[in-house]
Length: 102
Image (cartoon, rainbow, N blue to C red; front, side):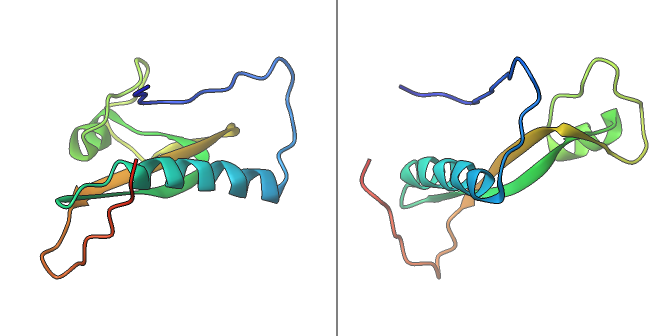
């Protein structure tokens, strides 16, 4: 199954241990790495509080702005959401292809 996003809405606030956060990041990284090709690398690159960017930042970053995003300004952070993001890019010619089987 191909997915683009995973979300968990807890009915009540929960405490995640450092180990649990690490495990979630590891799952995201493993899934990202399995999508690599000889031309593309993909990895878990960011985790922590969920950022909310301005419209100007979203334009620059290639992200969809929130409906209530300001036109400009510094990002704000939602500490109640543990956010994990992956990045991808073309593989450099100097990089060995370490493509993992799917």
